[in-house]
Amino acid sequence: MVNSIDFITGSTRKFQEIQGFLEPIVLVQKVIDLPEIQEVDARKIIEAKIIEAHKHKEVSPFIVEDTSLYLDAIPGLPGPLIKWFEEALKDAGVAQLAIQLGNTKAVARTIIAYAAPGKETIFFEGEVEGTVVMPRVSEGFGWDLIFVPDGHTKTFAEMTIEEKGALSMRGKAAQKLRDFLIT
Amino acid sequence: MVNSIDFITGSTRKFQEIQGFLEPIVLVQKVIDLPEIQEVDARKIIEAKIIEAHKHKEVSPFIVEDTSLYLDAIPGLPGPLIKWFEEALKDAGVAQLAIQLGNTKAVARTIIAYAAPGKETIFFEGEVEGTVVMPRVSEGFGWDLIFVPDGHTKTFAEMTIEEKGALSMRGKAAQKLRDFLIT
Image (cartoon, rainbow over all chains, first blue to last red):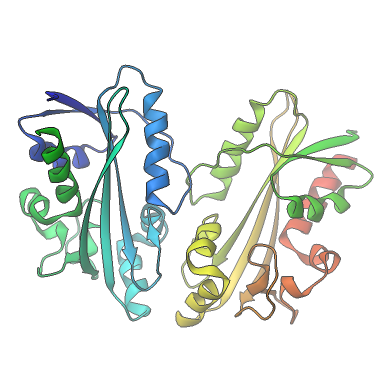
């Protein structure tokens, strides 16, 4: 069993959201800026990240992560391009887009890729269905401000990190990774 | 005056659309696959392309090109991400999106970057305003099927390559490049 793995990410928030799920395995954040290819297929993005990460020989075994948000109103989009939708339209603009199109259903999906030297990369996915709403609070990570998971009334931004982790796409993917690592 | 420049592009159609405007300067297509960064800012994309292109020492002086389509209904988008909108939604889906949002106005913008050894990169922009419409014919380059330039009734796809070139964003940028090169 591995005792420690690296998580290559510039996002301390993503690191925090995954770290707790992996105990007793120690997760170490490695801030390496991996160039991200332009793609609408999340799987291809994360595969390219793995290739880039392998160029940093000191890092292994390690994980990389990619999280996408899909709006039912524009099938297949924004997906991994959500960050650019956020940059261009802001949270309210993304929610407004879905509202204007008459369909606020959305799916959030995290892929965690685990790579160990000489082994094939393994992918763990977590998915949550929900709806997008106009922002209700002012502070939130990524698009947490506008996403309400099905069966709940709070947006991710209105939850504690533990509440969110227990039901989020990232938490689900992290739990699958842990199950794999401890067996 | 330079006699010949390279155009680094995998697109023969883009090559054809620019070639005619540069006479008597000879344009040579160099098919080099330049990795494209994930960005919603066209200028940053083309600057990254230039950096990549400089790694191919045999190529110089050269141009690279980037063309974006902006929908007024979703300010700042899709821009350079139009290719992913096309991949996910297809031509009809992109047009449908604008129609559903009640605003079919669009702007098409081409940036050509010219790089010569030891000189600063120079950028030439061409822009055309228009509207998006549902596809009327079945064959067309990129999103030519759904773009009608203002003051015209045909989509780019319904025009000859010469008709399109005379008024397109790519033709305008190419003419500015020629004016620069011959003086």
